[in-house]
Image 1 (tube, one colour):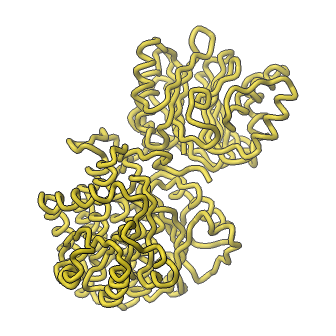
Image 2 (image 1 turned 30 degrees about the vertical axis):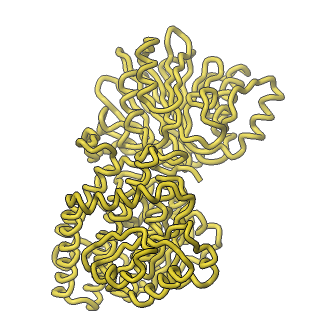
Image 3 (image 1 turned 90 degrees about the vertical axis):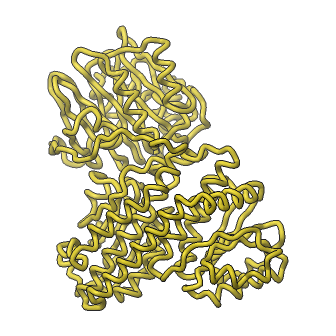
Length: 616
C-alpha cells in the first residue's frame, strides 16, 4: 500500500528526483512520507506527516543532498500516523523503506531485544534495519547482512536499504509486492514501486519477480539472486507507459476531472473494442478454446468487484456462460475447486491488488486459465495472466475510482459481445444496435455533465444528505450493482455509513431500518423491473421512509403522489438494460462527490484509504 523509491547517480544529487518520484507515488500512501540519504558519511533523514509537499519544504530548509538516497510514502498498517512510525527507518548506519507486511515481526523483534536492540516505532518495518545492523555488528558486511535478514522475513515486502559505510550500494528485495529497477544514462540507477513512479527518469526497466533480491552499485551494476534459484538475470525492457504531467486541468479535484473524462474514454472503447464485431479479441478467444469453456469465475475487490458483479449478468444473458463473482480476499481461503472448463477473470484498477494477486496465484497453482482486465500495463497481474486486456482509461489519481469503473464495464461488455458473436448467439447488426445505444447514452451523459440546472439539483440533494449518519441504497438486477458501487463511493468519500440492498431483500429483515431518519437512494429505471422495485419503494413510503429517486421521466412521474416523502429526484434519460451503468453510475459518483465536498472532506484522498492496495 506504500510507495518506495531509491536513486543513485555518479556525480550529482538525487534528492530532487526522489521527491518528484514520491509525488507520483503519493496515490499509494499519503499519511506520512520521508527521505534518507548518505551525507557526510552518515544517514540523514527527513520525515513529515501528511503530503509530500510538506517534505519538499523541509528538504529545502535543511539542504539535504547526496548522490544516493531512498524515499517512502506511507499508508499506515502497524502503528499510528506519527513521525516515529514514518519511513525511512534507521538503525545506526542502515536505513530502510518497505512496502508490505512482515508477518513474523513480533518474534523477530523479541529476538533482537534479547540481543540488546532498541526500537523507536510501532512498525513491523523497523525490525529490518535493526536486524541488518545486528548482523553488521556480528562482523558481516552490508550485503551479507541484508541477505541474512531477508532469509528470516515472512510476509510480503518490497524492501530497499542503504548503508552509510557502503555508500554506493542499494540493496533490494521483493516478495508479493511490486518492485522495478530502472537504468539511466551515466551510471544512474533507480528503484521504484512501479513503472509510473520512475518513468520520468528512465523508460529502461527490469521487473523483479517474487523471491528476487540483490544489490546495485557503480562497480558491478545490478547483481540479482533468487531465494529459490540462486543467481538470476531479469530482462531489461522499454516501458511504453506515458510520461505525461498529471494535472487537474482546472478542476478543483482529480475526482471531478476523472468523472468528466468518462464520455471520451467510453467513446474510445466503443470505437476500438467493438471493431468488426469484436475481432480485437479473436486471438484471446481462440487461445482459451472457447468450446471447452462452460463457466466464468471472476475474482476482484472493491469497485472492480462491483463491475464484475454487474457484468456477470451480461455473461449469462449474451454469452450463455454461467458466471459467478468472488471477493478475491476470500477466494483462496475457501479451498476453491479450480475447474478445467472455467475461465477465471481477474479485475483490478492497479494491476497490483494483493488480494487479487493471491487469488491468481492460487488459480495458477491449480492449473486454472486466467484472463485479467487491468488499467495499468506492466504490472504483476499482467505478468501472472495467461491473457490480459487493458481497459485504457488512463491514469486515475483520485483514490475513489470513477472512470475506471465504467471503463471496466464497457471493456468487459465488448469481450462478452465478442464471445457472443463467435458462438453465433449475437448477429453483428444487433451488436451495432447495442453499440449505438451505448453511444447515445454516453452522449446523453456528456450533455448532463454540462447541464447547470441538473448539476445544481444534485448539489442541493447532497447538501441535505451530508448530515445523516446512515444512508441506504436500493436497486434491482443491473441497478443493484450500480447501487452497491454507489454506496461504496458515498461511504469512502463522506464517511457516512452506507449500505446497498437488493430491493427484493428489503422485506427480508432490512425493512426494520426504515423510518424518517434514514434516507433511501433508489436506482429505478423504468425499463428494468420497474414494477417490482416500485412496490418495494411503496413499502418504504408506507413506513414514513424518505426516498431520493434516481430514475427517468416516467419513473419519477409514477411516484408523484408520494411527493411529501420524496427528498429529491434526479432525472435521467430512458435507458435499456445495457445502458444503465453509463448514465446511473456517473450520477451516483457526482452525488458522492458533492456530498463529500459539502462536508469539507479531502475528496481525492479520503482518510484511511490508498489507491493501490498492495497488502493483504
